[in-house]
Image 1 (cartoon, rainbow, N blue to C red):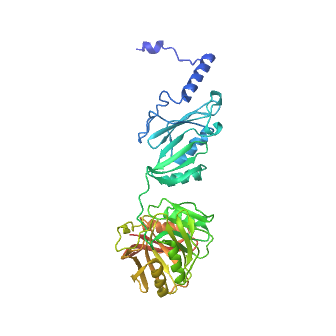
Image 2 (cartoon, rainbow, N blue to C red):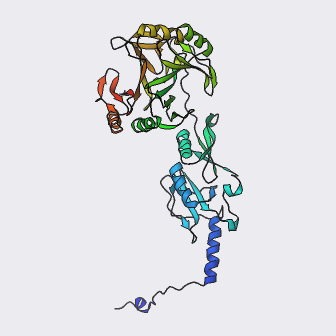
Length: 427
């Protein structure tokens, strides 16, 4: 039997709405969407991060909505929440981005409604406070992508933060918890290490691939600074044909240490004030170049077994061991014993010596040997898994021996793609 409801049903025929009504409705929708407060703007399912429209949600006006969506995604890891509403003239009428557990709304400028971005109005009138796990990396990445560094990253009593202005004129405070306090340096500890290479850009690419280093411009044009290492300050410096690692040693009294260096047969320039303290560039009595510096905060003296000796374990990408080669080991032991208070005990290899301070290891652990053609410093970098790290060295154009087990871990002897020697170590 035929269903009477089906038989009697009239086909649905679309009818164009009244033009005046359609225009009024479109305008009402546009105004509602551009209101900074109001009803929920989308019914898209909330992601698993539990991001949601909260009691107070930022709603940005930008001068290029499509570009802004891409920029916030690449710079801050934002993800679209639903599809953007694009108006007939191509402008973004409304879009939502998820950043962490929060929602950020944005739309293009609507001058006809008095809605303009900060650049058109002469500057921002508010700041956006963004909490991230690693302030330094997010800050640097945003700057690399075109944001302007307004205030550099620094530690404050309430945490670590820096301020950038994004390409659309909005001011972002990129914030996170303060970095863990580093173990206090002692007189004779290494406070900074700079890897000297011919081409700094090639080196940044190589060590970024092998060790995951994230480098940013340093104080000099040829310098790069490695960010994100938990315990150590490491840099790269280009234009150097002598491939080595330049070390900066913390000292209690830089002026007194300079006099000791000169008395011991070395050379030392007059100390200068630097952002990190008072520093002097030096050369030992066999031609090894280095620096001594007196940090802004006090350096602890070497007194027995210091509690500050904690923190000797290097993290992935950090230096776990330094091998210093010199022509004459007896002269080196005398020089560094006098200047840095280093003590020497026989090492594991014939002719090698381990360096100690007040009965504990120098930080990072250091050894010295004689008979080198010219002074050189060779680092060992800690890696979490040595097998894939060796593969990355070879893929990046360097050389690496097959990993070999030693009493202190598994190591590989390597060179980078410019001939600089180093070791990899998995402990």
